[in-house]
Figure: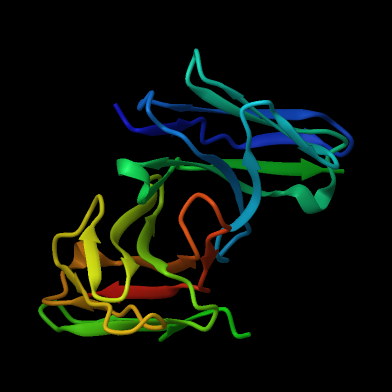
Length: 110
Length: 113
């Protein structure tokens, strides 16, 4: 079983839609969680950290469910500019390794 | 600040050749790492370093060497290139992994023929 798993998509949604991604992790000792955004042929960039109590940044909401070992990302009012691949990442290996999921591709359409 | 820089941007090698991918950061970050990204496989950690003089293996270290003689530089060496090493390589750095944002370089696209 992979340490971090994501549905690869693609998720094709109309502009204005709400879309949610989930990411599961296998190591119950994992402590830190993140969502990254990667545009085509570019480097990943941090979108937001995921805190135990959940956190929101504008149209983006991240949540952590430790009991079921998954994190989620909710995007409200999708924009064309949100089209990208969203990668979840988990700190493993005693705190020195950041393990990524394979990414979920989002395409927002007119 | 230039952030994280990588050279070269593109490289084509023949099987068996060796080369070094350069990575440098000017943010005084202690933690640096190398990933490779392949279609359907996501980002996989090759090697990482928590400070000058300290390196450790990630998920896929075979065929690669690293060193960290300075805080700023973290080169990745391919000892004898193989077609399986065709990939996009990203270098990343942060002050402390997990507590601070990890910044990625623009990547090196490597093709091994």
